[in-house]
Length: 411
Image (cartoon, rainbow, N blue to C red; front, side, top):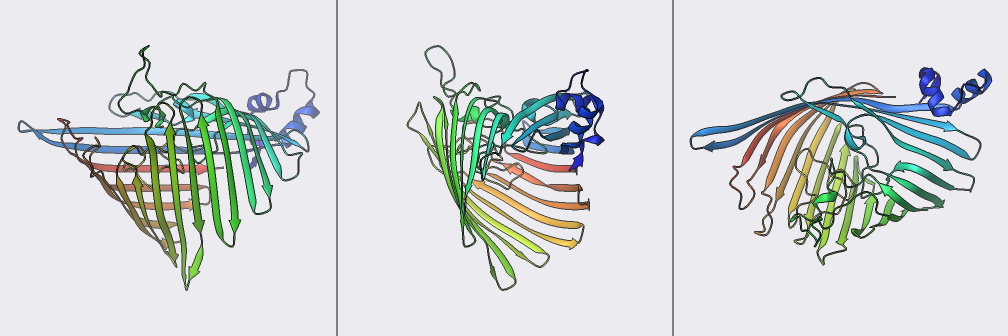
């Protein structure tokens, strides 16, 4: 991380909370105690969707966007026991990226928001207590992302380490959940059922209390974690995961298994997602193979498509939120040069059951990553995405060519 002296005087004053009467010495001390980190990311997406022919006319839709996001983290040591943290986002909604269509938008300006402001107390041995507006660091949410939305809340989080076991507990009286941008909180009820007043049942407004508890342990190379979250009057969920790492000759293997369940408060339907997989590495080669399955009553066990209780890796094919489905994710890559990596990835979802509305999906793409330096990386990926039409829909199947360019600077 770079020292705060790299930043402007305006930013320094804002973070340090100084007034015009502050002395030059106080300003100098404040600058010395502040570190800066973050990311600057640009992404170009180009999706060419083909829907077949309708009455002899080919149906085609082109969607291309320029996406931008800058995340700036400021960390200031107040005293020996307290650290102040802030995170600024230059981008779009919900601490996410600004996405500008090359077909419909001009080169518009980006929003600047303060997504986190909190204090961390470490005066208790092996314990950290965070108070204020902070990232929702749970397996069910996406706390931070260099390109994408982030979930935050105001409250308290306590983490303590007891040898091989780490315990965490949190309470939030406000969150940014339910903004319906890059998350799946409002799809818990796909039929959009309404109550007697006409309000959608299960919608998250962000003013609900959130309680979270979790435990992590490590024994002989095996990591175990278990977490529980409760969203007031909406749902409660839990997840249990197991990871390991060991060598078989020259091959490094990392298997994992995870089971997640989410129970809605206003219905007897349970959402369940089970996934199992293994990563392997030998020499310049890496490979992975994952399998996932969702319950016939529902497959929404996360509040964001990129959460740990969801199903990654994917590009456009995600198992999360789809009920009674099976998914396969596979990939192989080679570090052909110290700075160049080439990968081939495949994802497939079989929705099989007649009760689901979403059709089968499949994607295959290649990804080329070039790390010019430790803090500057670029990748290009290109492939094919197909999706069967939804049952009962008059829409056609989708056969799409997909492309992406991503450039990221980390500091």
